[in-house]
Amino acid sequence: MLIVRVEGRPQDERVQRVLQHLHALRAPRPVLMEVDGTTALLVEADERRINPDALRRLPGVAYVGVSDKPYPLASRDAKPQSTTVEIGTLRVGGDAPPVVIAGPCSVETRSRMLAAAEAVKAAGAHLLRGGAYKPRTNPYSFQGLGEAGLQLLKEAGELVGLPTITEVVAPEDVELVAQYVDVLQIGARNMSNFRLLREVGRSRKPVLLKRGAAATVTEWLQAAEYLLAEGNERVILCERGVRSFETATRNMLDLAGAVLAKQLTHLPVLVDPSHATGIPDLIGPLSAAAVAAGIDGLIVEVHPSPAEAWSDGAQALTPDLFRQLMERVNAVAGAIGRPLGGAETDQRRVANLA
Ligand code: PEP
Ligand code: MN
Image (cartoon, rainbow, N blue to C red; front, side, top):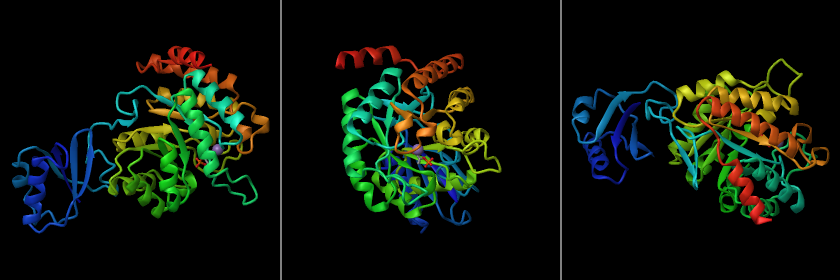
């Protein structure tokens, strides 16, 4: 695969000129990825037919080279600098401070959703989570409230002033779910649902792509490639623990895999210490470790009353424990020069709302 990096956006003359040049050589139409004002063109062509030097001489062409990665657009061959994904005014990745996503596993009742939203906002979280379509291992477990859950999540997010994220489990639901939230989540069980990946790729919404519990780092990055190849460049990766021989923890947090993904790709990488461990007492220490390792953020399950939760209650943090986690994470983020900031201001904003 040939990668051509051009300064400018796809509609700019410089990019158009490269496209015309390739067309004249009868090269297949390239796949385009535009991020942060530069365009990467991926050409499935025999390099012998294309003279790289002629391409390099075209205005705006910053790089021409061959990518041997099975995920060329996600790799740093297509974009050496880290990508920052914008969610409204919130920035994820690049030089942005770590972001914290928090909220219940599932949207349950209105009062619980509002209580969770207020608690996580007051503690300084940046995004509100809550599942409305739950991919449960057991068919008799609570499957989520569906659209009614999306409405409650949206209402709670608006009330406390937080953008929202929820999981989408089926290609036919993407359009509806995208109307309610700011970020779509693709869960571990669906990382290899290629029709879902393509549909979310076409939606252009920011997306959090979790790593499958038995997926290699390469397979995870290839799943991200599906999203990028469809034109959605706002992809955030999330390591959530992998299956191992160990039964003492729910999964095994592959922090090495998460840091490796950050080195191999330009995309932001988050860590989910809740599903990775399943144990509230481990979530704070592993959050601190992930932030210390340069991870771009966390997604943590928080419930106003974990014992009563309809899903994943055993791993949910209480609002109190979440506040302690935020203090710890803030201290570590400050120590590595990426302070979270804003928690105090946010608390004042919530107080003003009440
Ligand atoms: C979740 O976030 O509640 C969830 C189901 O996560 P995962 O896909 O990582 O299991
Ligand atoms: Mn969960």
